[in-house]
Image 1: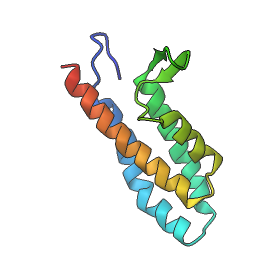
Image 2 (image 1 turned 90 degrees about the vertical axis):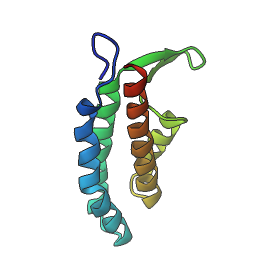
Image 3 (image 1 turned 180 degrees about the vertical axis):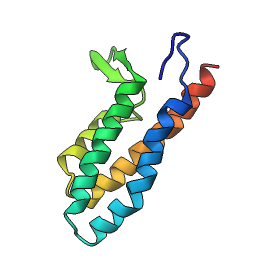
Image 4 (image 1 turned 180 degrees about the horizontal axis):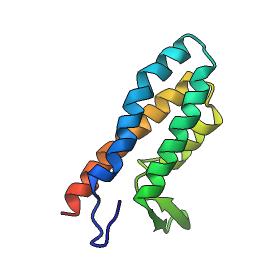
Amino acid sequence: MPSNNNRFDKEVFLPYFEQWQLVRDEIEALYEQKDRQAVELMKTAITNYSELLELGGTTFDDRKGKNIFVLLPLNGEERFEFVKAKISSHYAFVQLDALITETKKKVARLAIQKK
C-alpha cells in the first residue's frame, strides 16, 4: 500500500497472495472435475483480487481519461473483466492466476523502486 512516503510495503499485500495460493490448486481441480463449487471459490478469489487492487490505489491514465488501478498488469482491466464475465470457464481461472502472478511481480518491483 502506498504510505505517506509513497512507498509500497510488500507485507501489506502478502496475505492476498497467500490466500490465492491456498485455494489455487483446489479451484483448478474443481474446474477439471466440472464441479460448480469452482465458481463459488472463484467469486471469492475475484473479490480478494479486487480488494488487493484497491489497496494499491489508483492513478489517472491520460490515454484512457480515467483512474486505473496502479497494480493492474498490462491489459489488466480487460483481462479482469474477462475473468468476471467468463467465471464458469476454466480459462477465467487461468487468466486470474496469470493476473495475480503478474500483480505480485509488480508489487515487488514497486516496493524496490520506492526504496
